[in-house]
Length: 105
Image (cartoon, rainbow, N blue to C red; front, side, top):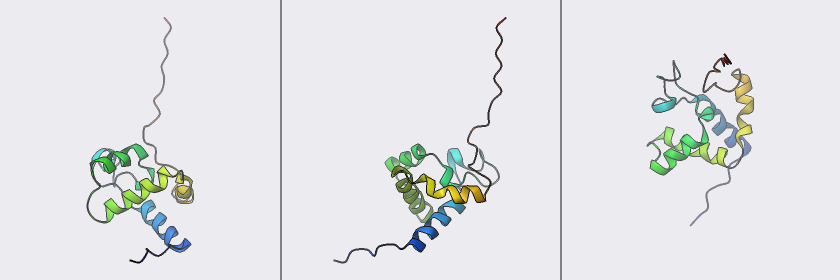
């Protein structure tokens, strides 16, 4: 039985770039809530990915990338996505800021 090869820095960079470029095509963070393509996978909250871990990730490439993204986020390495966020204009806004109206009358 052979161990899997240790990934190189270039492998990690390619994985991060792929996670930073793919959008969620369905569900709460899909195109209906975040037009036109959906939320970028790197900006999906860890809790949402954890829910998928409990229920089962989708089949195929998207499921594997969601699993890797959860692994990165759960180990406190979310800051690895910051260069991609800066390149794309910052973190995707999940909820627009609401104007607070306070009336004391």
